[in-house]
Image (tube, rainbow, N blue to C red; front, side):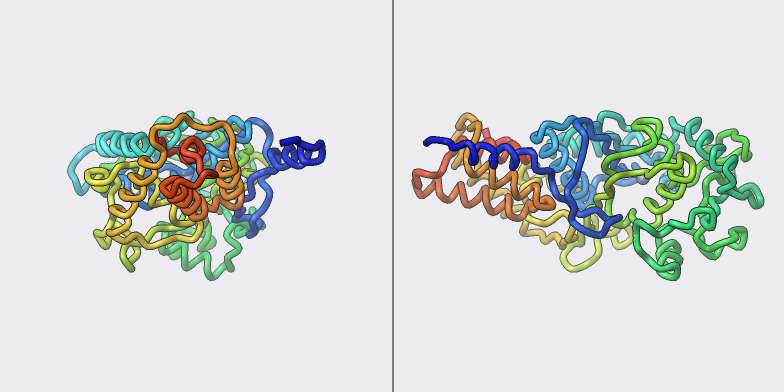
Length: 404
Ligand SMILES: [Zn+2]
């Protein structure tokens, strides 16, 4: 086929069209304009329980974004922290009667095994809060020097009245923020706070909790300041993409913005991309309800590639319910894809991979990708001449699913 110059130009332009993703701060799907090198920070786990399907869905979303950005020619530097000291891991370690670092170690190993099995990219660095105390203390000191803090009875707080843009990420009213803060680990009723939305930067430790020396007294950091300090030391003051579960938008990410921008005087992250939450058969999936679906349990009967495929059938942002029959269905779908691929070499081009790329660029439309892959398998089964096992292999590989 003769390729006319205009067609060539159109193809070229298309190839350099950016991905479009929903940016929480702008509350819209926007073109993601990035330099060659992309600095991405994704809030990691608090290692006090095993990886559940909600974690898997969240980290799979960023993995797909990274794979597509790399496909577009970017290099992506991924930093995913480990919150190994905070208000959730310490009580759990106390309940189990073990050292919190021992608990962290065990759960971090389980998490790594699950992530490797799911074929998600390894993070370039995984800073741990307990190994980042110096940077955390330095950052709090900067905030103290700049007049953003106050200390009451040994606890140092961030004073939100010094950051008028507080709320710009979540777009919540003050009353909504106060209600959510109470639900998500904040202490809006704490009489030591000047404002219900102020939050802890540094606090005294209980007798059986770890503590570090600091200019603000012996104690331990608040949760939010950990991520601001860890992202800054690994990636610098400004990020390209910051990610995490949607339940982190407020207060965690709102507080990160307040701290980082108050300390550095520049925008913290160019884009904010959040993954929706996963429910289980009609009920919110939560530790307290005891209905968490663990990846390690699913892996006993379902190929991890099928878990990936099953999660891709849901849009990353919508939040979805997981039903027990989805695993076996995805296993059958995977077997069908493998059979249709027939061990073919991955093809270099083809219309399927272009359609998959377009779908990924369209705010990570993985349900459409899922459909496209299965439709191609069906066309191969029917012997349609336009169908290509090599294209199927290459398209699935772009999504982290190896069919060969
Ligand atoms: Zn975080």
